[in-house]
Length: 311
Image 1 (cartoon, rainbow, N blue to C red):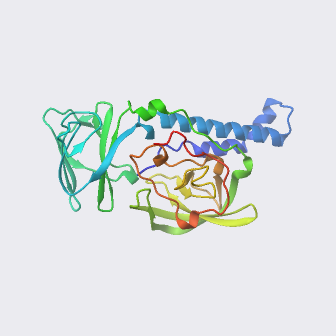
Image 2 (cartoon, rainbow, N blue to C red):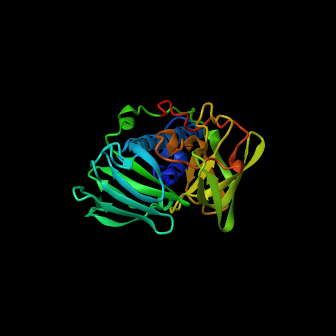
Image 3 (cartoon, one colour):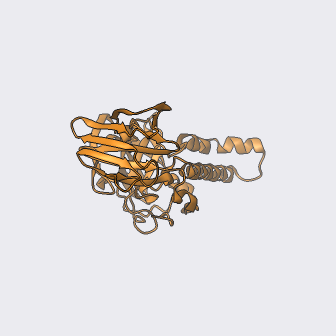
């Protein structure tokens, strides 16, 4: 699975450092520290606005309306009740999937179905299933979308629809107050080469990821080390973590930090930008949980709170 909905953190973190210079140019009366705090708060608020816009987008996490497991063999697919895989909308008979752990997934469209991939007609062929690296084949049915994902030898399907009820119901996210003290500059310790690491997901399946280093820092007088992973095929780094608010004020399985790759021996962890995982918003995706080493024995009262409109 990918996490592409996380937005512009490198830009936001950079804005903080610019606060004093920009305030001086404005000729404000406040102290430099107050000006910097104001600009920092504005930067976090812009990041939150971008995050909300991404969630509300026609292709955001709120657009998922269907999902399920796929076993080996042939599966008829469509919205009609006589299909093996019944979609919540779309063509009555979309086509047939052939699933094989060794050969992968093959799709043949029904004669009456109109299917496109990357803007081109698609009637028969192999479906890529590597959602973690963003290479899965997405079958477009007008504005709706169907695709297959694979984790190990487990296959599943996903369906997205811009008319999803969750998009219409969405009223935003609750947050902890913005506090610059939760912007932590940590020591960065990269590993010589990415190491394979497997996390459990929200449904208990294994999710392979790449460990690229660790971040060491002090919170409330105690030293912590978080394992840092690579965000799919991208260059961002990914830190799933839990803390003493998890399952109470914040989402239980984990919250996520996405940060740009550091250029030196420091890495900025801004917990004011901590996000709920996609599975907080929809039951139709699975999400990696925080590894044991990323469970913080402190209440991180920063970032997103539990989503009150949860499924």
